[in-house]
Image 1 (cartoon, rainbow, N blue to C red):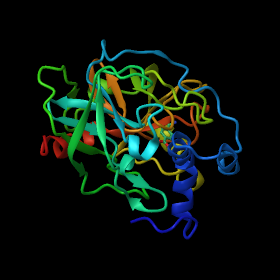
Image 2: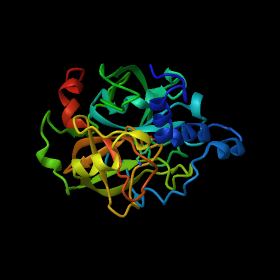
Image 3: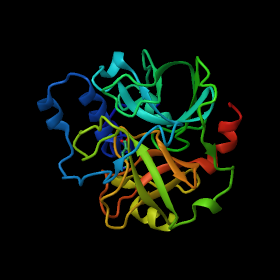
Image 4: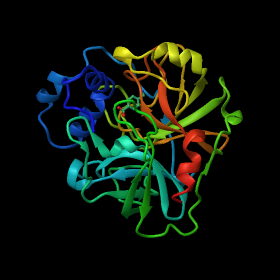
Length: 287
Ligand code: 4AZ
């Protein structure tokens, strides 16, 4: 369990990296915005995702994680993304179930929303979740093995699922490959959560480049054993808070899960994703 914030430098660093994620969650509930302003990142962040509207009609396996009880109903309670990988299983990020201050947290009334592009609406279905599996080696402090599998209480029948890249199968997403990331997250880095699903094209970043971007210390540490980065050299396109757990896809296969990063869409700070080819066997063992 991570130490209380600011009690140790590692926790403080994790806090800096994910500070806005906490804001994301706060912003979704009726909290005075002035209170948020006090804690908001000082640096201006560029328009995220720099992406476009996307649809669950085209990508029926993209799902939202939601808790109306915790985050209010304005956006259906959406707080993370995920991907349907079998009729009853959703892959997402473990950190969607963690809190800077409390460590592992409950998400009362947790639902997986399928077939809803606009979180202000009621299309599709809100499916109850039977259980949440967190990777046994997940580290909140190191952001390692940031993967969870949700078991749905109701089968999604013939709804199309997305295929995981294989364990150790890195070929399909070699550095420079174009990938797509999707989510309902922040579009500016200032807590502007998108009501509608968005997607953006990013480029897989060489491990060495990402190791330079995140050497440890304030910006966090990239570890290629369990992470892969994607973005643009100039910035401008990225995942952001609220997109966490959402899919990074290459050629229609799931290669990454939105995990962490410094800011959003900043030059020289690509988005960091859970490397699915490192956790595929562990995930498959619970499917
Ligand atoms: C987050 O806090 C988060 N720009 C997600 C993605 C990125 C940074 C932070 C990548 O959930």
